[in-house]
Image (cartoon, rainbow, N blue to C red):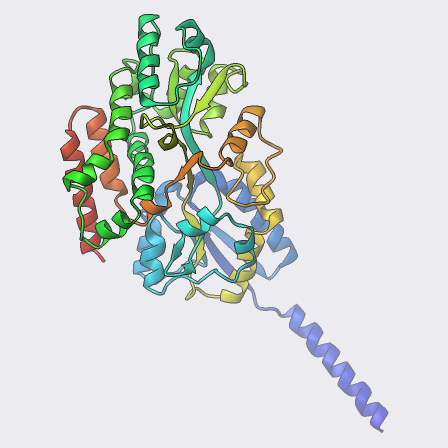
Length: 420
């Protein structure tokens, strides 16, 4: 009799387990991925996850870079929380302190992530998002044009850069080309300069964010003299059509040798090759740090970690969300993202074998001590990005004076603080 009862219990258990598996409740996860170039790799990773977890459906919500500035805040206002979302620059602090984001400090990805990436997204000791990509800013230069102008070595100081500009002009070569039809490159220029200024004067970030200091304070303005000196040098020595071109158009022209220098990021390489297939060969193009000082130690590449992806802790199906997040940020997931976006990502075990020889050089250079600035201090300010774009675009196009730029920046900070 006992044997019969035991058999029945086993049969019932098997039936229950089998039934539970068959009737696993369907789950939908919504992911706001933000950057357009991440759509394909995130889609691939979502498909891989759904193959292994057929009860899960992953909906990708796109919208390009603007998604962070428009769609996500609207969803938050309606308490329509996505499961995973790109958190716009500066919003880790806002959403984190509002209690909306899950602390990721115990996730496996943390152990594989660079310290700068973690610092960028840490608020009050808690990590609220992780960047999926990293970028490197510097100044590209055409080695043949430099040689033709008699420039024998890469400029290392502002004085040397100005001397190079004079030699280029004397040789009939336009020193710079840029793509300033849109305003975002100009905004980035200030952000790069701000990275150095705020890193060297870290308390300033908190002081401005808490209204103890202002962008318009004379000594604060003085900190940015170097970046304005570089902007002025570009502004006064660029091609006549630089204000009319997109960055892509300017990159093609740089590849064609229309001008000797172009200042932007590592992703510009692909477009340069459209103008010249050899543009990113070591013998053709160089990539020097941002020159903002006569002290070589102040002239560094700017490494930035883009807006990070975080988890909204009040979303539906939180446990499954965490499982998918861990998969997205696994070594396997990161390698897929790296290959499909041509970006090494801010992870210590990133595979960079896909990169061309020029980019491999750049990646090696930025790992050297003292060769980079990181904009994490700048990102801790209240969101001022609209102010950055209008202010620096106005300066580049001769609409604003330097002091008016700082007026605009302070106005953006004040508006952000008032909206909290």
